[in-house]
Length: 78
Image (cartoon, rainbow, N blue to C red):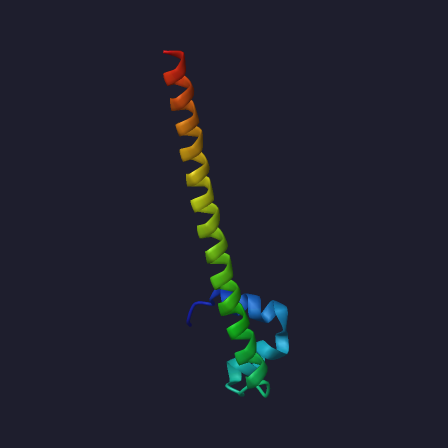
């Protein structure tokens, strides 16, 4: 008996019939739509990664600005 993967459980809960088709090896009739969905998710993933990178760079620049401001104010008081 092979282990049941969490993706199989998710597939079954989402659509019992699709899970059964996949289990029996029946190919899906909507291959074009599935490919389009895969490409959509790939593009979305790239956008999410770009947003995370932009946010990280923004936070680093903000911290650098705060440190620079604190150093400037500290040097004026001394």
